[in-house]
Image 1 (tube, one colour):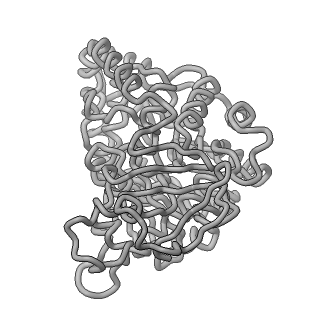
Image 2 (tube, helix red, strand yellow):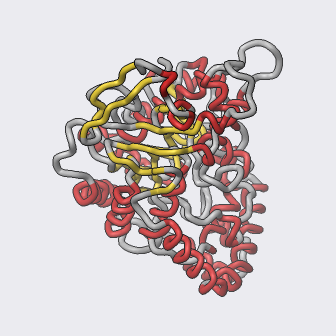
Length: 473
């Protein structure tokens, strides 16, 4: 709308009005652009890039075991540092798929929620749920037979899980929601924390657990967030074990609905996309992660043509190891533009994915700047961003995609509270958090060195297991 003033009253947008005399603005005032905060529709809140402790980029099925090498960190510290990095890059809402640290999941979730509130961004706290295939997609005994007797025992001790029953896991989500969500959320801005069911993926969840989650979601209205058909091996496993179709099975049990977000969907087929679109399911595309973990490239255009609602996520695996949501949008824009002159993406379409992302996080519409709403505003230093650009040569949307970066984030308001000011996160002491993480890394190097040989032998057995198609039997 051109130069305007945004009047706030106790964090609520009171009025938005065109400037009466734009020429009276100082350069600093006129060079700033206000827009809705960015959304990270799928993440795990990693304060350490996995490669820093030996979980190097490779196929997901080989990479996952290496995450056990991570030094033990305070859940609060790790989450707060990760969320502060997102806020610093302009992210005002994120889905946090919590990876349990091995302690009490309720206590860990309370720390995650506190970290989000201290940083000040909206958070979908997706509680992990799984009850099968902790070692491999399929018969664990066939995998263990590929290891020495000593390694079998150690692999079981480190990676094999004994999960609670399906109903106990559903009840635990409800207990976490009671502990982490406000009893009476603000009518205007809602609650920063939105607890969601997070079945880790169909290959990791029994029919009993998936059906219990579908029933609970329909009863409570609570959202579901799940990893879905991320890799070729997951696709092959699904085809072998669900001849009627995995997506069809999930539809039959009432799992598919507008309350569902699936992460990845790289190996979805056209008919599956059409059914998901009919049911109002959101898909979070996580391009950097899929490239780094050898999963493939999500079929963006097929998803869009099928009518699916699309969002984008960082997945804690941004291509540059920084939580820079602008760079992730730029990567998606260029990667999903089709070769040639026809049918390409527009900057507006890519930026519009933020709306679906907001719904995936909060289970409500939002992400707009208008009077009467709690302030959800990202301010970028647009003048610095385009200082070498010919004036008015391209649209605002194009310039944001071409030049947007964490370096240009000036301030961030979420739910009426200022979260970032002049590039600094206000709610937590980032240098102190960084120092705590660095101290933990230095003091626990022995853990990496001692466990790494077992990880490598486990990975070699996995190569044989999947290479011989044992996951399809």
